[in-house]
Length: 516
Image (cartoon, rainbow, N blue to C red; front, side, top):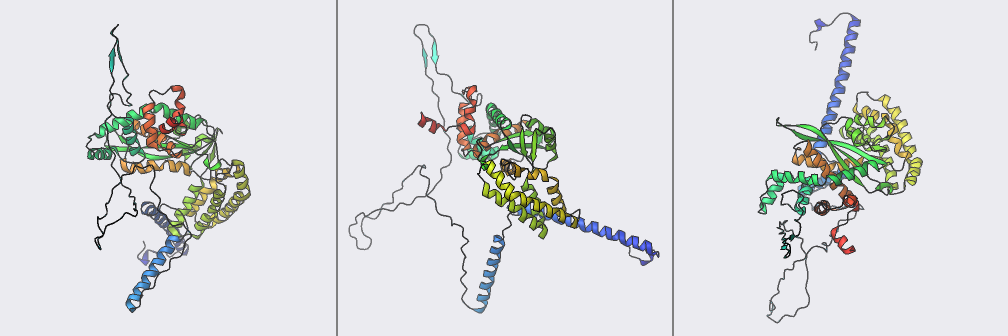
C-alpha cells in the first residue's frame, strides 16, 4: 500500500498504469471474497441448514406470522387490551389422523374392576357395558436358546449307528442362529448401529458378546451370502438397459498407522418403476480402495446401455467405446443454482431454478406411464422448455463474471447439454440420478456412526450386505425377515435354484407354508 505521496510517480502514463493495476487487484479481491462468502454459506447450509431444496416460502411466511402474532400480543399487554385471537388459515393439507393399532400385534388385557356399590348412594350396580382403550407398548427384544436334540440309534444286526445330521450353522463352530445374525446385519447396515453399541444393548439383556465376536460373525455371514450377492450383481449389470451410478467415500483403517485412508463404495441401481418396466428394482454395491476410472470399467464390463451419473471424469472411459451411453443428472444442475440462490438470493439463479422446475412438473405428470408415452410428452412439453432454457443461458452467461459461482453453474449445465437432454429422446431414462443417491443414503448415515471400515475386506463385506438389504427395501421386503430366512437356507439350497432366493423372487416362510 502506498502511504506517502512522494512515492507516486510524476508521469501521467505511469499513474494510469498504477491505477489500472490497482483496479484489477480490486476486482480479483472482490471475486475472491464473493467466492469465499459463497463457500462459507454453502458449508453452513450443509452443516446446519435444512436438506430440502424447495423454493416455496411457507416456512418464511410462518415465521413472519409468528413474529406478527408476538408483536400484537406485546402491544396488547402494554395497552391493557385483551389479546387478539389468531386465525389459522386452512392450508388445504389433510390433518394427520390417529391410525388404529396393527391387528397382527398380540393383545394383553388388563382388567380394571369397577366398584362393588354405587359411590353416591351405596346401591347395587348392574353392568351396562365397557370401554376399551388400547395402548401401544414395547417389549425389549429377547434372546432364546434353541436346543437341537438328535436321537441316536444302533442297528441290532450290524451295530450301525444312525443319527440325524447336525443342524446347519452359518458360522462354522459358531453358536449364532440365523435370526440373531440377521438382526446384527440389519442393525449395523440399515439401522446404523456400530457393533460396539450392539454389544452394549445385548449386555443389558444379560448376554455378553465381544465386539470382535460380532465382527467375525459379520464376516462369516457375508462369506456365506457371497454366491447370492454375485448372482444379484450379474443380474443387475448384465440384464439392465438403464442404470444409475454413483459413489461415496468411506474411511478405511490403514494398518500400522493408526489413521484412515479414503476408500469408495460404488452403487449401480436399476429402477424401472417410473416407466412401468418389467424388471424388479435392485441396487448393487462394490468396494474399492480408490476412485480410479478403472473401477467403474471393471464393475460395468458386462453392461451395455445407458448409465445415468454425475459429471465425475472417471466415468468418461465408459463412454469412449459407445457400448455405454451417458445420461446426465438434472438434479446436480439444479443443486448448483440452488447453492448460489441460497447464498446470494440471486434473481438469475432463481429464474434458472424456476425453469428447471418446469421440467420436473412434466415428470410428475408422466410418472408411471409407458416409455413411448413419456417420450411423446417430453418431446411436446419438455423439449421446448429445455430449448428456451439453453437460449436464455447462452444470452445470460456473457453478462456474468467468468469466475463467479453462478457462471460456473451455467457452464456445468451447458457443457453437459447433450447428456442432459438425452432423457427427452428415451422414455426409459429418468431426469436425474436420485435413485443412486437414495441408495447411498444408508452408507452416508452409517459412516457417521461406525466411522470407518476396518479393512478393504471389511468394506467388501459391507458392499455385499448393502446390496441385499437395499434391494430388499426397494422391493418392499422386510430386510431382517428376508436375511433370517435366507441365512438359514442358503447352505442346503440347490445351486441351480439360487435365483429363488433373490429378494424379488423370495417368498416368506408363512406364505410358502400357506401355499403348500
